[in-house]
Length: 296
Ligand SMILES: O=C(O)CCC(=O)C(=O)O
Image (cartoon, protein in one colour):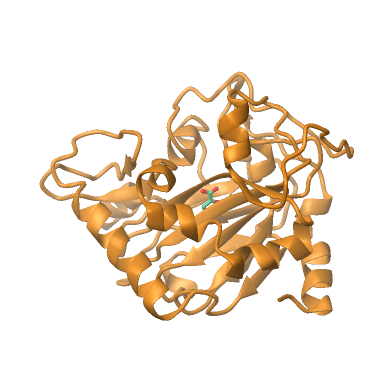
């Protein structure tokens, strides 16, 4: 359980790190299953509902950038982990007694070339009727400064929702040059394998290219209080309620004002945040392709 100090720190700064939450057999299985799913990308030629591939992927040299939400449907282990009481008991202290999984994914950030994620707020992707919405991240590997830790700008969840549009379309990335934030104040969230990060949906965050020799895999789960309803709507009510991880669903959304920008019109490049961010035409973090070009 979280201490009063941790809860206060989350409210003030918008993030927490819980060291070594997932351990032993459970962590070993998480890593082994992930290795197996990535190995099965051999022979996959293009992005599909499970795999988001690195630009340098080939069917003979599989390079997976992200495992998409299909892992929660296809693999019972991932379905159960998102509902594990070790996680939901912590979340109930931040979101209340009824919680719904909004979505999730497993970002790989492989050694040497794992892609950066440009600065953004999750809230720009999925605004809700109130902002009792957050994401957790479980590190599958030890995460230090050099293998692309998740980085956050403390306190920015109390500020505006920044513009995540380019050329009149949603692009899933802020424009670092005009948002007025000091990225020098970013805090890397690090810890041994099995540690869990928590960040508020409005907190500005991103992560750099992994140029180290160690991979950095991060299993992200997005959670909302059951009475925070997505402003983009509910397409399938039964499916919506099937994502309850704690307590009872409700048909009475709670409204609490928070700054909103709708992610519309949708991104030109659909599929994942990496695809969305291709449309921004601007970059804060160096990419693998740039690094290789400069080296040559
Ligand atoms: O994998 C990362 O380092 C950041 C991921 C992230 O913020 C996202 O996918 O929304």
